[in-house]
Length: 122
Image (cartoon, rainbow, N blue to C red):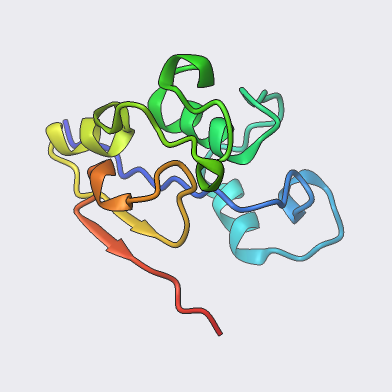
């Protein structure tokens, strides 16, 4: 059986204020992904802060378990980068790439991605 493609998109500070959740903010590409994939309507976050919440999603651990007690830029990096999902996916034959920001470690190269593409700032 073929492995499914996995596309994980984590936007920064949008919350649910995009078209698929019924808001009048046009996001046609996100809308199309929602129509063709899975849209979570009852989800919970592990933390109200960016870094701990992302770390929980990408490690499967609560923030206090993975060591992400606060924001990475305030000195709280992911305790064990081998717990990051990129390492798990690589071990299972997936190619992983990071485009943009990740907010859980100062050094994104330790997270296990095969490719890291930095966003060009204007």
